[in-house]
Length: 78
Image (tube, rainbow, N blue to C red; front, top):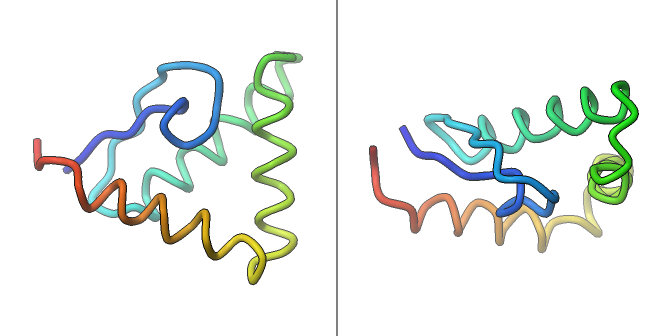
């Protein structure tokens, strides 16, 4: 199990996302940004738009995905 924050994944806050894989924390971040958008949290809107853009253009977003996976891999196990 490892932890990454919203900020480490490009968001504005320090909410911790825990998971067994980088995909677990990336998906948790996606859910967090969607919830923040629904709640009207303007601070999270730029990160939400960026995440939405990545899902729409996966080939273009591959660099971000590889970086996030590497950052996750570099974290110590909890």
